[in-house]
Length: 186
Length: 403
Image (cartoon, rainbow over all chains, first blue to last red):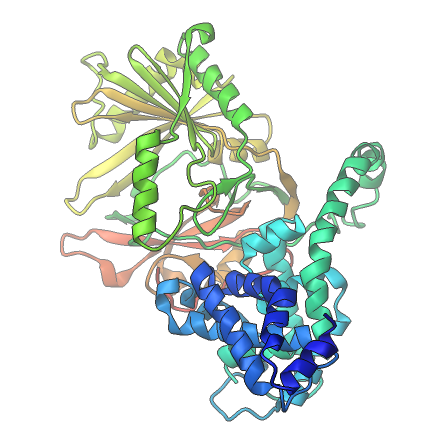
């Protein structure tokens, strides 16, 4: 079923919307959730929570042209929170590690209230990613969007773990320099 | 914004970028393998020609990959050596400050470990060949030997799987892969592990002639005498063309007992090869509590993945980096000052988890806080990369963290 027809079902409050969403995107959403949480049961819960969130937010959102992107963003958010809240998943330490890496990208990390809104941040991060060559961008996104481990990225791209780490290290430095240069204060 | 929030806001990445990273990467892997298969011969043909154009006017290679320092310390405690004076800490390290070493080789560890410490890149053929070679050196006939491994039997595996399940987890992929190949023969057990270390256990332990005092806390002179005996008696086993003795140690335990260890390595024509042999290709002998020869190890790590010959810094430059906190250490104290540096040597860190085997200056630094009432001092080990920092992606900076 086309994305716009699925969105229409949400807008009409027809519960068939969930069924069609699950059929079309369920596997990918669960796979993303599993990649983040590393636990099949939790991944299934995150997938189901995604459908509930989608039901509650369409309307007012009408992601006719970007339904998958809309859903996957929800799944990522839910999965990430699951990892933080459920230490038994043994992923909370991994999330901390990633957060620490991300902190290296912040020009002047401190406790001052965040001065950048979502739109500006989106502009900043996408501007930076657009400048990278495709491999570097993909590696960066696999790590900090999909939350892949170094070993998984190494296997996926058939490159050494060392090269993955070096690439990420350089990207983080470049991102920090980019944010400083473009005047984004975070 | 803290790192946590930054990680959350990564969800604002352009969906097109996300979809590309999700899809294109898998396809790219297949293309990469096809490329490698097609280009292998061609690469060999052009190798000699391209080599001529990869050095700059100073003769330094301009296409050396960046190196990454992996600070993997899972052990408890820290690396410190107790002695009354640093001069008691001895070894036959061939490195000298006046050696003219502009570059030193760096090797990539052929083994990769995942989060569950399961190794990939293990070469079982090389392990088997090494195992049979060591057996041959000990006079065993390869045709009469059975090689086994350390894969747990069916029952043990079931128990392990049950334990994982009870913890709500599953056995990681590769968990039951073999890590060692083994030969058992009369009086001997030989094991070769994935790091290409051959361990020989003598069963029963071998009694040395009475005049040799091969015990844990024997004097330097006694240990040196044992070393000369072993060098002759086990010449074939040691196997180097020209064998050099390395009596190393001289540090004390908390009971003020001093210990020395015996190793051998091969002499070589040039300084670089000598340093490589000293650090990598060595044979060690161990006693038991009764003064017998209980065990030996031959270290022969796989150095087939040479990354390149990297320019190295001088000792003076390393000392400056040390004073600026640019070091790796497991010592829980900041380097107390250059006046406390009592000894230095150039070595390779050869731990199993090192991603690159590269040279470091190891500084032995007296830790004033650790001096004991009996006068025993502790010298903490601080490592400064010997490779020029422009080739290191994550030059270390001491941040006060302790393992």
